[in-house]
Amino acid sequence: RQCASYILSAVSSPTDLHIVEAAHPRAAKMEDILLAEPRLLNGCHCNVEDRSVTYQVKNALELASQSDQEEIIIICGSVFLMAEAREALGFDEPRDSKY
Picture (spheres, helix red, strand yellow):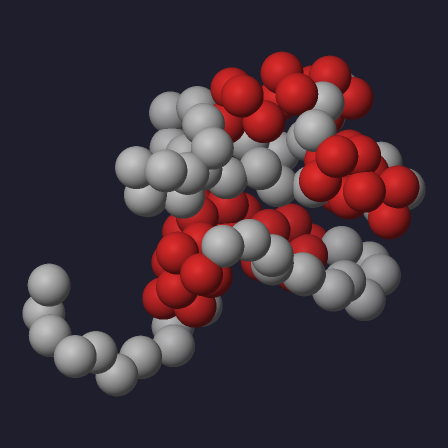
């Protein structure tokens, strides 16, 4: 709950936020994030049909490209979420194995 409050204090509106669910068993569920901070229910971007980081990164990039203003996209989260975000952005990361 505190994390969401901190983030909301840094943005002008919940409509500036994209909520995701990392593909990791210990990751917070999207519903839990939304219930922990009810102000997020007022317009944040989320998709319960496609909770992926990739979907929301691409959605954020699309919305930013349509804006008349210069937009900055900030992605924050766990190392698992960041790995998914970097992959969605096209970074080809070296890997120790295929698994």
